[in-house]
Amino acid sequence: MNLPASPRSRTRVRVASATAVGVLALATLTGCTGNGSDSHDSGQGRRPHSTAPSATPAKIALPSPRSAPAPAASLSPAATPGEVRISDGPFTDRVRITKLALAKGPAAVTGHLAVTSDVSHLIDLELRAAYYDAQGRLLGTGTFEHAENDEAAHDHSEHSGPQAENAGIDFTIPANGLKGSPTAAVVTIPVLVNE
Figure 1: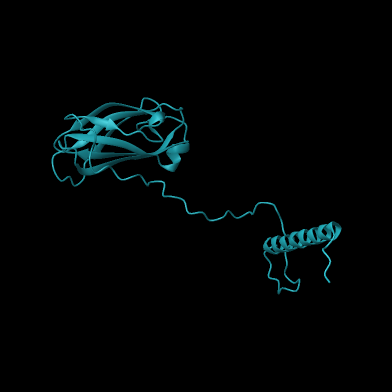
Figure 2 (figure 1 turned 90 degrees about the vertical axis):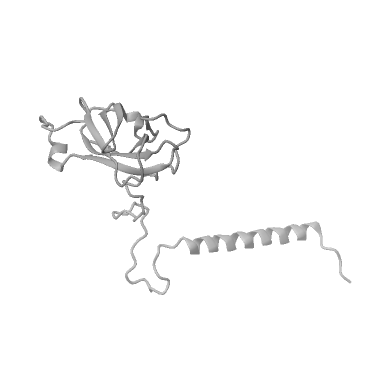
């Protein structure tokens, strides 16, 4: 005849079960957080596990610094003839672009850029223009690049060339391989590096 278990024996079973589950979980987690050495190593060649950061940085795939989103296939809302827009981006608040114009024959966007965020030397700058027709269709693009050479970027004496961080620089973004006659353009700033 089986007698029902007493409340005290049920409590012991519950405590024993909970303890067994806890020990099993601890053993599993401990096995997953080893020091990276092979368990068949027999102690030779082991290095002590350190929590200090590694001297060699982990290799992380970063996007190319010159990757900018592709221009929109169509311009919306439609632009007025001769209009040049500046696309908002991560660098538009650090510069002032004035005298924007869409030149015809050969097609190009011209203007003047000055760095407003600080007075450090401009090391690298890239401006891109997307050219659109009267219906707002993309016709092609163009790029303007300005780069200080290493010596000029670190030489704080007088520069003979244009300096975007002082009075600014004039720029021309020539159109490349257009598929028609542009009536509007959108300028983006994918690269702006200053010291």
